[in-house]
Amino acid sequence: QFREIVATTDYQTAEFVTASGGVYSRHWENTNRLIQPDDDHYYAPATGIKTGTTQEAGNCLVSSALVQDRLVIAVVLGSLPESIWSDSVLLLEYARTAVMVDLNGYPAAELPEKLQDIFNKSRQTRHSALS
Image (cartoon, rainbow, N blue to C red; front, side, top):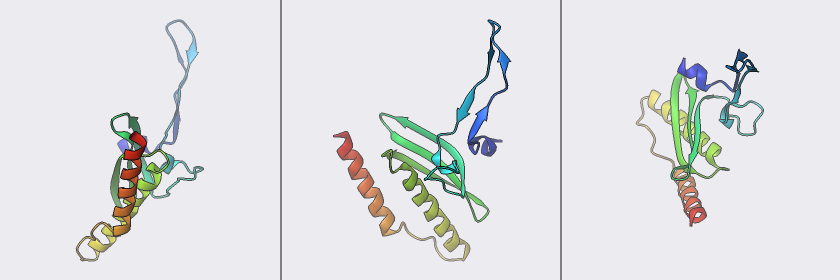
């Protein structure tokens, strides 16, 4: 049931009567742009999970994707608002590549240099933005 809930793009409650006799309903929209089909950051293999932001942690996203019949999870903490989606996709794509290599009997690949460069730049940019 968890997977179904976190993959839901939006949800409308049934109407209910309040204590004062009014009729009320709620609408929630999932803020995970990776699972919104009309969004520029849509990532078809994504299966959901949770966005969040705090002053201490910055912009965070726990995302999941179905990769070769396996559920993989990426956790991005302290990202900038404009890069959280691409950071998550990079990790999910890395997991896809590593899983492919692992399934073929080879040792899992090390973190590609390009991915490490992107994380280093993101970290430097975030530190500059906080200074």
